[in-house]
Length: 120
Image 1: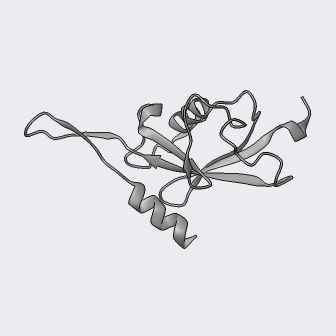
Image 2: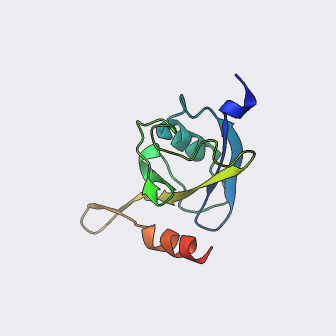
């Protein structure tokens, strides 16, 4: 496979740090497999890390990407930035338990991420 067939991605975390960049094949790499990379490479010193891929949302160009789609199917701008790195934003939504009544709630970090995207 030629190097130009690959797309270089990095994943921006809530505090502005990154995982990556690494190169991926846009036709065979799924969003779910990217989330597996994020979960496995999540920095140990960061609080509220994802436990499973279901705790992670990937945002590219203002869209939340679906697990079962490849990068090419998700319309990630492959080849538009020769030699450039595409940054995807990571939103973590770990389930939090309410100890008083045993219910589980989702902690939503969308507002924090959206504010970060607007400022950057």
